Image (cartoon, rainbow, N blue to C red; front, side):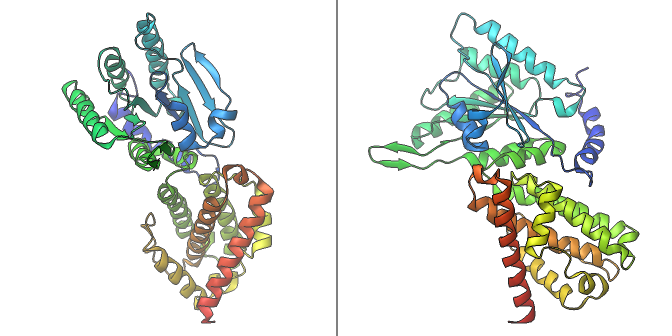
Length: 398
C-alpha cells in the first residue's frame, strides 16, 4: 500500500515529523519539494522566479532527473523545484512523456522518508491558450490521482472577462472528473505592459497562501522561508518558533532558578533568533548571532530587571505584545506569565522584537543583500538597537 495515500498511517507520523522539524537545538528547515508542471510557454520559469527569487532559475543546481524533469535547488533556500521541461502534450512522444513523469513523481510520492516526497504540485495553464481538454486533462488526472496537494495556476491572466470564464470552465471540467478539490488560481507573475498601460502582477500571494494551507504541517516552515511573497505567513511560522521556546522556558526547571536562568535564557534567545532568521532567507551562524548581540544591545541587559524583578521590564513586554496583537499574523501575543516564568517572558520579548526587526530588514534588502552576511549583521544590529532604544524611551516616558 502506498504510505502517502494511507491517511491513517500518515497522520500517525505527523507528531514525530513535527518534533523532528521543531527540535529546539536544530536550526535547519525542512526542504519542500514542489513540482511545477505544464507545457512549454506557460510561464513556469517566470512563476518560479517571482515566488522564490531570480536566483532559483538563474543559478540553481539544475540537474536532469529524467529526460522530462529538471531538479532545481539553491543553497540556503529550503525549496527544491521539479520542472517538467519541454513538455509538449500534442507531440508523438506525449504518452511516453506522461508515463515517465508520472512514474518519477509516483516513486517520490511513495518514498519512505516523508521529507523526500513531493509535497505539492503546481500545474500551469496559459489563460491565453484557453484550452483544457484531451491529453492535458488526462495528464492532470494522472497526477491528481497521486493524492499530492494540487493547484492549477492560470498564468498570463490579462483579460479579466475571458479569464474568469476560462476558470469557470476549468472548475466545471474538474468537478465532472472527480477533481473538485483542485484549487484554480489566476496569476500574472510579473507586471505586463500594454499600449494602454501596465497591468500589475497579482495572484502570487494567493498562490503562496493556498499552497501553505495545503502542505503537510511538518514541511510548511521550509516553504514559507523559501517564498518571497507573503510576509504574513513568515510571521505565523516565526510565532510558532517563539511559542516553542516560550513553552520550553515555562517547563524548564533551570529556567526558574535565579542566576542559572540567565544562561538558559541566553541560549534559547540565540537559538531562536537563528531559526527565525532562516525564515527570512537569512542564514545566521553562531558567530553572526554573537556579533549582532554584541553590537545591538540585543543581549540580556535587562537580565536582572527581567529575570529577578518584574518592574519596568514586565511593562515593556506587555506594551510590545499589546501593540503586536493588532498586527495580522500575530495571533498568540496574549501570553500570560506567572511570577516564576520571567525567563519565558524574556524569550517572548526578544523573539517578537527580532521578528519585527527581521521583517524590516527583509522588506528593505534585495535578495542579493540578504545573502551578504556582513551587510545583514551591520544593518540588523542597527535596526535592533533603534527598536530597543525606542522601547526604552516609551517605557520611561521620555
